[in-house]
Amino acid sequence: GYSEAVAYAMSHFRKKHLLLFGKLPLHCFMVRSNRMNLQQQTSLGAYLVQQNAVPSVVIAEASACSSRYHCDAIASEESVVAGVPKQRLLSALADDPALVTKWSALLARSVQAARLRSKIRSLPRWRTISPDGSKKGMPSLTKAAGRR
Image (cartoon, rainbow, N blue to C red):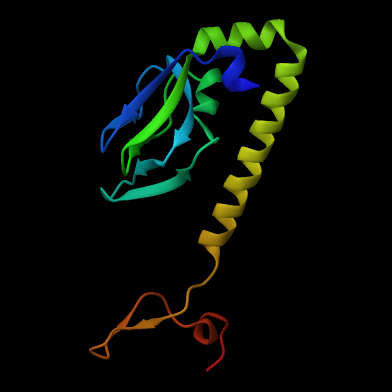
């Protein structure tokens, strides 16, 4: 698999960036323990977490075919990742048809998961009422559906 075929090192990160948006992608990574958050900064300055990567999840997989990283990756707690140089991964894929099949399946699962997260984010949310009685959040589902 990915980790046996090409991974070269284990690194520890705690509340530090592993990837930076816009930087030249030199590595892909697999989370081995705890969690890495992949996030992008919006035009308003807020951070949108696109993925909470847990053990066995490969991150920066899209960067294998890109000239830059598409988001930041930061550890929310001490985490361990296995890294592989981008060129080493591409060479292994060129030489090993079985690895290509596994890599393709991993990419397909990543796309499916991203679509699910996008769908969930597009759903209307229930309005929340704080303990002081003030209303927060988006309109209730009945108002969102045009009912009163």
